[in-house]
Amino acid sequence: VARDAAGNRATSTVTVSGNVFDGNFRGIYINQIDGESGVIIGEGNTIENNSNAGAFLDSSVSGVIIIGNTIQNNGEGDTGIVVNQAEGNEAQLNNINGNGIGVVNNDGENTFDATSNWWGDITGPSGAGPGEGDEVSENVSFGLWCADEDCANLIVLPSGESIVGDALLAI
Image (tube, rainbow, N blue to C red):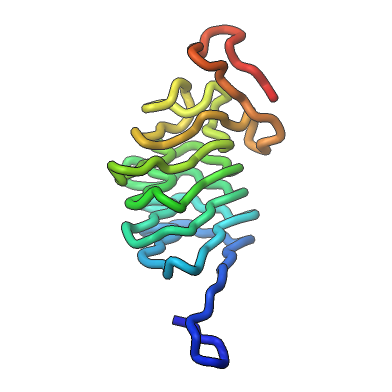
């Protein structure tokens, strides 16, 4: 635990950016974060070809933002992101594709925020999602998603409609 000059617990945010995590068991593994600290996994990381998961957030983790990364071809069962605690963690504006399962939320009580990601297909995520892209599990929020891997446009599904023909709206 970091301390300031007066001996008080220091709060901080660690940013991990511009790295390649390739060919490991888990690309990024976070098992504990002090409630007053945070981690930003973002802007330009490539997380690929890891045998268990691209990013794994364990049950004592809150305050992680996964943003602006390429997360592809990962995992046992091809898992991009695994979260054991959803509350306080999120993944946005990522290119999540080529994983058989894009996001798995093992937290049965809370929803993991994975809105505004590219899922490898314009129709959005599959599994608990309505589309044909990488699969998401139950308790994953994906209510709008990127229309392309650059996330220049978002797709939103009108309330009460399913994805058929022109039901998609670009915003």
